Image 1 (tube, rainbow, N blue to C red):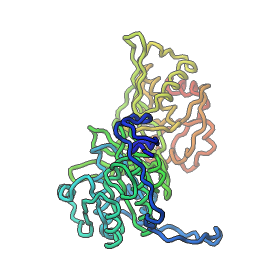
Image 2: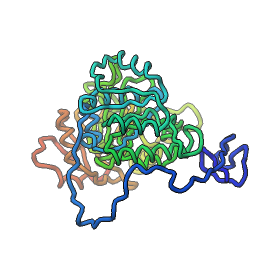
Image 3: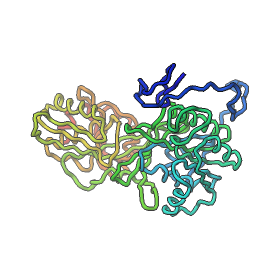
Image 4: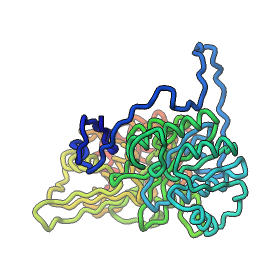
Length: 445
């Protein structure tokens, strides 16, 4: 049998082009392994009753980076496998070099550089001014079996694999970066982590669509999946938690790329509110939740007369389908004609939001630009809008209001259904409304 190394398609004969993924010269012959030849990393354990298993708290290992620890749920867990994906040049290796430098005081760290030479890594560490490198070892190796021997012999506590697409294992067929090799290497590294109690960081490349290259099984095998995002022309980087078996998901941390490396940004509200003291039409402040963190974000809209036959609709950082739905609600429920208007919506700071509670702020920003009237600079808008134009209840309302109060805003508009949940200790002026039309009449008097 012949298997495609890219998608796994099986054929009884060799083919020049795969009919499934259309890759050229990707078929390799499948070789049957002899039984008992694959080395086991862990001894078999007999089954136990569930009631006999003692549940104990997992000890956390702090990395020294407060924002990184918060994303992980409080720190590292012994035997954890963490996958970090991101676009080329976003700073994945720089981030892991920062983490390795901090962890070197807690145990021996091995940096496996399969892409760059040890000299290149050393030059980067020198450029970043890292002095705590006494307990960090660097090896230029691309075979997982040799890495396992290093870990077992030197008893390393932390390991960085840079990257999963350029390492290979002898137990799997195919070239480096193929589906079979990525799957086999990830499984092998996970066995090493669980059997020896080693924390392993894995760097993963991403495709042009932004997903981690390789099979989806790669994300299922590991314990934690983090995406490192950033714009090409921006110095800010966002670390987003997609999967975490030992913590929350959907949370974010913001870093700033400087000449000395990555620096944590703790007051991220200042980052997403660049025009805090200015007021102009088409601008509105919302409070969205990313994971467990409430964020105050500025939404900007521009509505202008269309000079072409078809009106344009564009959104940046806001789901386009949701944006189109809100424009239709404005036309139907607010009785405002936008059919001949170009409508643009932007999330300030380059952040992408999916929180339904941002609906009210987006609608108010669009109407503000259309009417050319300014929304109150000290007000924050929170609420989900239904198809009938009603304001629907949102979750974690007290968490949002406390963040609004901490940022010194004076007024907040929320759905009527959330009023009974508001904590009485909050000194913020909170107003509840049932419908979008009521909010429009109150704001644009």
